[in-house]
Amino acid sequence: MRATATLAFLWISSLLCAQHNDHHPYSLPIDIPIFLSGTFGELRSSNIHAGIDIKTQGREGFPLKAVSDGYVSRVKVSTSGYGKAIYINQPDGKTSVYAHLKKFSAPIIHEVRKKQYDTQSYEVELFFEPSELPVSKNEIIGFSGNTGGSFGPHLHFELRETTTQKPINPLLSHYDIHDSVRPVIHSLIAYPISEDAIVNSAKQELQIPFQKINDSIYAADPIEAIGKIGLGIGTYDRHDNTYNKNGVYSITAKLNGTQIKGLQFSKIRFSDSEYLNTLIDYPRYSRTRQRIQKLFRSPGNELDFFDHLEDGLIDVETGKDYAYQIKVSDVNHNNRYLFVPIKGKEQEVAVPPKKLPEGKEIEPNRDYLFMYDGAEVYVPKNAVYDSNRFVLGFDNNELQIKADHVALRKAFQIKIIAPDSVIGHYLGIQLKNGKKGFISKAIRGNHFVAKIKKTGTYIIAQDTIPPIIKASQLYDKRWLSNFKTLRFTIDDKETGIRSYQATIDGKWALFEYEPKKKEITFNFDEYFSFEGAKHKLKITVIDNVGNESNHELEFYRK
Image (cartoon, rainbow, N blue to C red; front, side, top):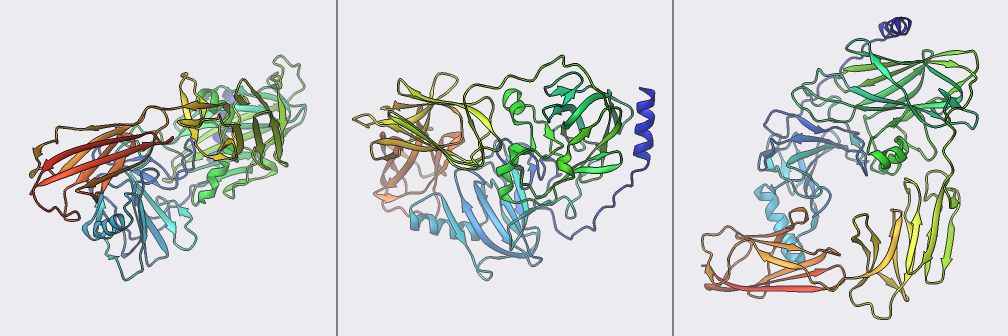
């Protein structure tokens, strides 16, 4: 251990400290202390995070400000994704993005409401010319919220190159976040890659213990190996005065002083998320939800920001010693180092390789068509990242598509024969809790059809229960002159809600929809005019197979 620690200290003492970039004169988008719950490039379950998430103290409604002069180029309202979002094109060739807003500023609301009432749709997208909605630096453009695919109040903030729409890391040169905390490395995994590879007498991936030497250096127990091997780490970053486990900025690996792998989140493409599962040990993540980042390029990884030499693998030869050095950094140049000594040694196998799963081997470089009496599965080229075995079959009206913790790159296309009567029927997936998940209602010929990116058991199910509509309080036959809103819960227990519509006195009325709250809200504002005192409200909700519910009431308002 003493020799290992000495080698680690000698290595780290030779490293040079990086310098910060010049600060760019942007203002902050929100006037509260800045703490982050998400960083740029963070690996999420389905995407690579394209911005930073600024915590808003668990509350909504903080004023949001333009970080620079510019003009509102785009506004989008969606029940998913970014929810209510504003895009501002700036003179420096960048676009700032503000997402999950509760509401927009008055000039933007005016344009959005016109579009919503013109199209009779809550979900809209608008584009503007430079002269239509100019903004000044620090001008209030909206208020923080929790709309769309957000799991708590916060501001998702992005900077993009305007011409390419590639997101760039806002923390590199535009904002300084108080952070003196080094990233954490919590796991080290070794992978035998070549057929002849062995790691510590095992032909399976193996967790390697390591110890803390000082505040910045860890040293792993020596690895004895032979053949081509790769390493992976579990890591996260924390900032001052917060406990959120955020993504790190960069990971580099050196072998005997030569860099063989580099991963740096300074700029990404939205299409990079297609390769997310090649960056991590996906089978391990699927089994345990532990995210291990590979320090080598695996099949299907086509990411530009993943620098490597010889795919980042280590070709271990008998009788040779190797010094493998891992550096994990955040944007404030807080670093953590892990020193991994590797010794090339022939050895007996104590832990044999995992048994190959049963099933048909699917390779990425070709397509496949599997036809059954009543069902069909089409696997397009490059649907998988690497060769994997799948168990496929159709029996007792159940289509099986199963594989052991395999990520799909592209969707499989499936067909299952429809029953004679399709009222309320749909193509679904059998869930682990015994319930059924809705997949598709689409029919082509006499088959239900769908594109799927999950393995499992697919079935034809039926839903005949209409959605639920429930007022949040008593509105019927009441005077509502002092009310600011009308709120209703809408829900469907099986297939989910496809559409909803509301009218007041026969005129389309805008109800904002938040699916995660299962709530629709009407705001009494100047964009809907009332005539007389007695008014009739009708709400219609339709689920994904066409079951319909209606709710009618009368209220009074002048």
